[in-house]
Length: 319
Ligand code: 13P
Ligand code: SF4
Image (cartoon, rainbow, N blue to C red; front, side, top):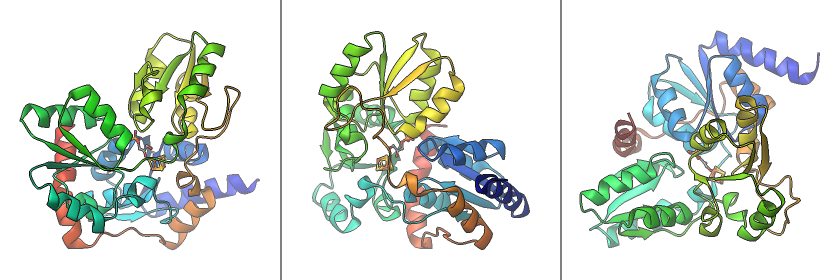
């Protein structure tokens, strides 16, 4: 049989032997997403990944995604072993928000409640009052605004700006962006919409404001998938990582999904939008990490204890 089949077979066997479960993000290779589904794991957005990892009974979690997802799993499940196909998979938001710069920034604005996106290091989370993912960011900020709190938001400025506009909350924004979503351009999207006038536009809130202003639905990966299923429309232009098409196409096979155009591309663009770090997760890397128990993610105990507080708040809020 093919190399692919051999890897799939070997991974399934190792999962059983090691009482391990796969937790994959929607942006990873469809090979990994389908493997997670076939073996009782989960394919999910970052909030659901965190919750599933904590609640499942497995001894070993194999997290296919980027580093912060593995770290979060490890913090929430200190008794479990967390492996990743690669520990090199970072995120431009995490990179652009180093704790050495972030901590003094928080100190300078000590009157503000610190809310950080899940796409951050454990150290940044440990400095925060709240951790949020894109699926609950709006609701959490509404909640804090109602209590009269002023917010320090990091790191994604597009998501921060979107929430600020929606809620009118007093938010001081850190200046970082997702390199994948930032490439979506309103001009190309406008041209594409002319080609597909009946299409609905689905956008992740890490996209720039000009793109979000054209969107029919704005939400986390799970929320966009739900919209793709629930809306009666036939055609969707999607502004997020194209890995999401695996699940959209699976749940709505009769519908058409088109990737939104990215920088420098016109309405004929069909590729692009693909997170290079998510792409580092492969069948081979997953197999090797499971076989060898390599790429274990550990968060130092003191740090994990501190980061657990805002992460617990996140899970309680969305329970
Ligand atoms: P979700 O929480 O919507 O899955 O987003 C995670 C992410 O990295 C988006 O780029
Ligand atoms: Fe980070 Fe963007 Fe990749 Fe998500 S898609 S992991 S936000 S770089």
